[in-house]
Amino acid sequence: MADSPAIRQLPREGLVAGMRAVAPIAIAVLAFGASFGILARDAGMGTVAPIVMSLTTFAGSAQFAVASVLESGGAVAAAIAAAVMLNLRYLAVGTSVAPSLAGGKLWRLLVAQLAIDESWAVSQRDGRVDRHRMIGAGLVLLIAWCAGTVAGVVGGSALGDPSDYGLDAMFPALFLALLVGQIDGRRARVAALAGGLIALALTPLVPPGLPIVAASAGAVIALGVRA
Amino acid sequence: MTAVWVAVGLVGLATVALKGAGPLVFADRPLPRTFGLVMPLLAPCLLAALVVGQTMADGRALVVDARLAGVAAAAVALAVRAPLLVVLVVAAGVAAAARAVGAA
Image (spheres, each protein chain N blue to C red):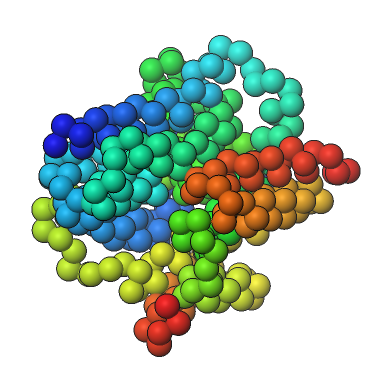
């Protein structure tokens, strides 16, 4: 993170840097993958569907939402709606990745799937996304998430609830650490403050997933202050 | 079971489309200028929202629980410039301890 922007990373170095950056959090992702697998199995999703879902949807909160709704006997439409709302933020995240991608359209579409909160967050460099870092980080997290899911649906988890180990607190701690590195001026400070406050204010008022979508308005608000 | 596959298929397709829409639309042309200005600010903005959501949100409720203790401890670790791995371990350890003593 302290590297000079003048140092152009070779793709391989970028990939490895991305893999390293998410290595600690990958353990938590693995554990939560197992809890998703267990919940999905208990929800009657079988063994194959949860694994296919981890490979294709690859977004923790949305997958937990689907499994929870189905487990409590809720309607499929409600499960889908909840998951789509939780993933709406990826429209903004994906678009912010767009200028960094290269290659054909199918390749771009595939690489964009590796953009999840954690991989996107650790690959921010100089106001844009370093795609090699994001690919390295995304692949490690995808492997951890899917391996955890397989372990969960097949064998359950030897660990029990990952929250008992405080693993759920690792995610906001990672985002906080990355946020500190992003606060490099007045506008960034205003953007962070506005984003945090909007999320806080809207959480009790709108369905889960929408507060963070609305929070992206904080970035626009911040444009209004002098840099 | 069919219902399960419908959910898995539709959520998967929707997620692929949400992540891929921007990269496909802007594959051959540059992002609009406004978006280019907003983009560097999106990271601090969304990171702050993620911190708030993952620390205090439980569905539609705002709650104070062990996660907040863990994240507060992580903030202290960050303030004394601890390495990232230490920050994450401190967050997990304090949250686990808070939960163990029954702070929920």
